[in-house]
Image (spheres, rainbow, N blue to C red):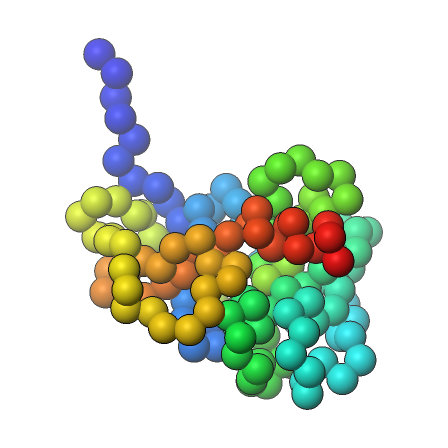
Length: 155
């Protein structure tokens, strides 16, 4: 008899407007907004790669998911945090990506009882978003790490 895994323990991380949902195994660490080198004129541009962060002696690109979705405002950048995430394809050039987030992450078990996909309720561009979900009554996005990785490789 095989036992099925019911819960996927995930981090629900606040962003500027929405929340980010990622399995806990994808997030390597969430760090303060330190050692970040912002690109020139990033607050007035619409670039989605906003800079780089040095983490464990590696330089990792910092991505603003809001910018991938076509939003320009990043809020108070210095109040951000950085979610260091593993990329999924074993690419040695981009082994990690850093996502700008806000607030403290909350570990939540995600299962059929407390989550559902949201369809046709989100307007605007969904570049960099794999899916929108509702977890415990909170709207969250699941980032498309493959898409982000491919954009970084081609940039």
